Length: 244
Image (cartoon, rainbow, N blue to C red):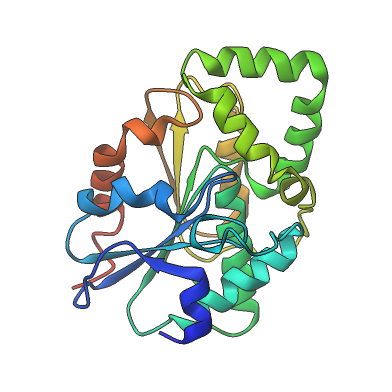
């Protein structure tokens, strides 16, 4: 792996013989360590790779990125430098799903292989993201959503403070109409998510020319912190046909 890729891409396991590269796109307000609990739950044929963004974790002394498209270009370059003949799967939770989408589109636009599967977890479809943010930004709706979500996420206020550092990045996103994905999309929906309604996640169907499947998990917006094993099981099922 090139030195510049080391700054962005963090392997969460040592699996040189793994047949699938699983790229885990960062969740707002978190570092690469967020996905550490998922790694031991994955099968040996999956190599989990995540991203360490400037201003987080081992890069905490670096100046953070505040423009979404600048970040997408950087993640695209990170994937490009770690690309080989193995199929790639992209997984993104919340705004990380949108970053995975934009990275996939940039790869394809550059004539490079895109992911064979994209998994969008509690993530609004890119065309819906800005409208959802405007809707939730109204004070009354924001308070109602956060109070409802707090019932599912005990440390919500701590997480909200962390996410606040990423708000300039999140609000800078603008969806640009263009080519749809050619790969299947798996949708992960939390049944008590007060921040991203299920309809906004289901709208991902308009972003791909391939098939989609929806899986529903118990919990709120951060459901996956309690569902790593089940999530790994579903990732294994959804990628069963990617390697021989």
